[in-house]
Image 1 (cartoon, rainbow, N blue to C red):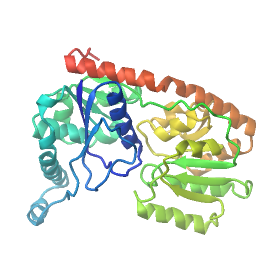
Image 2: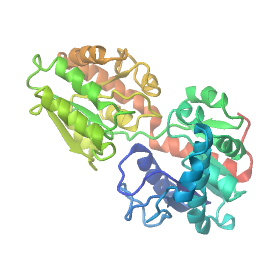
Image 3: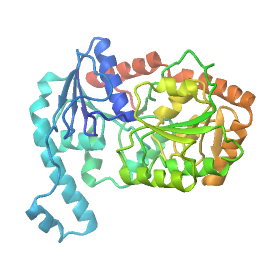
Image 4: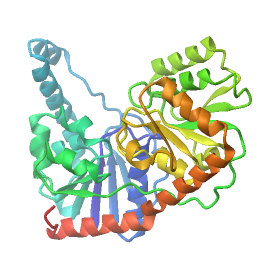
Length: 387
């Protein structure tokens, strides 16, 4: 099968979850005998943070491109309402991107296109008039995209062959906004073999440093509330510190203000996340929302007990409160109480970690990739069942 993968998110030297899925899927499809072309749109020069097999044709169509309005477009936009401005900006950006993508999207060369973003689907269908079957992936909680989508995005999403979501609960949410076929295929979770290494008294969070979604400050504040009770414990953050530099600075200021510099550590992005999990005792994840939570599931697979918020989509389905971890009410105090329960009880940590590891077996890579191959074949043959 000849497969084209299109991703308009940042890819070059970017260590996010969606970027990891993109590279892993390209590699997997190639290893299973498919001819894979993967297109990114990133202004930066270089290669993805995660390895891409030599048999995968990787193209960065956005290298050196600057997205933005010229002086005339800025003047014109100043006369529009807020909604009109957003639609106008979308059109300008789509015009730029479509011109960059067009040379690489020859319909005769591909049997199926996998679109990693609704915006990519919008360009492929509305601008490039592609007729090749398109699978649109949703890597996030669907409502974060759909509640503010433009009419042009809605048109494209209803014209593509099928939409893939990550969890069963996302089907009805998506159907509130989009009339199309929807399938559920979760992300894969590595099945780690060693789960008996958690000897260090450390709490870890693996995510980009991001105030809107990942909210690391809540974890710092929660840890601060119990620091005197656990002076020999440490809190470690692993992830891109350049994504939201102002928020990273805010985190550093809070650490200084609470005199936590001896206990709180930022390690930056890592290509050996298993080593981080194997040394830790607890995984803490104060996100506001997630599509699936790759770092969370990987930590669970490594045998770590986990803590998250009850009102966080995906997290509240993956964590079984009181069984493989704790789900907290929103706020700092509840999170601190959950940390306290786990930090004070090693037997409880081991019990919950073992349950977490067992719960992740349903996301074994072979099962998930088999689901993807079946979907790709159905879409290519136009035999996708009604959902």
